[in-house]
Amino acid sequence: MLAHSLFIGKRSSTRSVYPPLGVFVLATLLVCVGSTAAADEWPQWRGPTREGVWKEAGLLESFPAERIEDGRLKRRWRAEIGSGYNGPTVAGGRVFVMDRQTKPKQTERVLAFAADSGNPLWTFEYDCTYEHISYEAGPRAAVSIADGLAYALGTMGHLHCLSAATGEVVWKKDLFNEYKIRMPGWGIAAAPLADGDKLIVQVGGEKACLVAFDRRSGKELWRALDDKASYSAPIIVSQAGKRVLVCWTGESISGLNPEDGSVYWQQPFKPERMVINIATPVVDGDRLFLTSFYDGSFMLKLRQDRPAAELLWARHGPDERTTDALHSIISTPYFAGDYVYGVDSYGELRCLDAATGDRIWEDRTATPKERWSNIHMVKNGERMWMFNEAGELVIGRLTPRNFEEISRAKLIAPTRVQLNRREGVCWSHPAYAYKHVFARSDEELVCVNLAEDADAPIPAPK
Image (cartoon, rainbow, N blue to C red; front, side, top):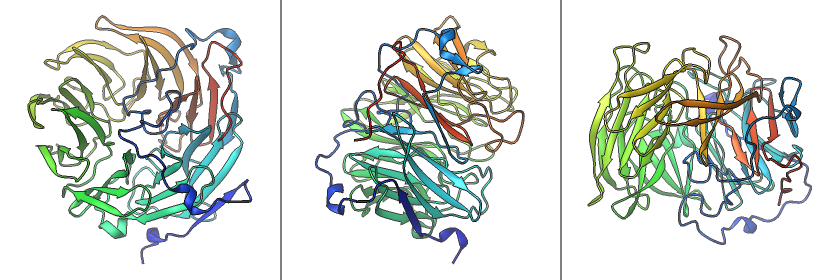
């Protein structure tokens, strides 16, 4: 048996009594993604609806001097963690994150902390040896939380459903061996999607690129597509009066029926070099925008008379330095009306005309000008919260005229495990919840108050 197929997990916790499995039975089924999540929580990748939108009010307009300490934003708490690319998620007064340990042996861990104090609540750890994986910092996919269950997907395809309260295993899958994964060069990365009674995972198996599981039992409900996997997270969109599952794989952009996995439409995607599509597709009305480091930008029209899609335009430059439209690697763009805002291959912040892909403007101040430079953008009202790879949190506005910086402060120091170049990077997406930001590096998880109220409360774990 291959080393990475070892599947023995162990849990440690501050609790001494664990409720029976019956408490994990779901009382109410979700009818849409994130429908049970409170507006002030961040239960999955890119927030409650995977749109990168933060709806809380009463936040800082800028970073005042009294909120700065030791050259960075004053922290409510910090907790030591190991390395990993996945961003934290927040629900039920808890913060969830994954990391990797290499001594005394190679393992991956799922960690839960109290959101109000940073106190560790529980740890679930399992053996996981990385084989033929580039960039070995740790797990990629954010933990998804729904109805008191935590879904954690590891780099080598270990999938665990855990009690969010205790870390106890409800069910587990070894996707690599069960589905014969054709492993991407950077491992399994797309965050699982909780949708109703289903958990939808981009697996990348033979005739099983996408697999839906029953969220309560782990039973397979359906499988679809024979594509190789990418690193891009699936989303649900509304099209022609239907809920459509959109998945950007290593070989296509597909719209499926999330109930049974049947394919509504499919656009071929043949990477020019290697599969490197990481950014999540973004939608505005009847248009869907995608961007990749080597392959540039694509705009699809989602027909509203029936579930179908057609290519409106595709643009890319001759190489990664001479780009056209947008060649993003990690950053998911923001798409609003007539304009798309995103980060190009070397950190250039750009505004595009959504109708054509023409560049409206470019700014080189938001993040360092480096290969693969990154910004995670989250919209809040008329402002954009932008976390760049230098570990800075930037408050700004993106308009068709320009990028307007309002305020900037250090949030967390970059580390060199994720990328052993320059002075290190911060590539993990932060979470915004309870008027606070939760961010991680390869060494620590931090919580910072972003509310106007310096004593803004955070609920205790429930």
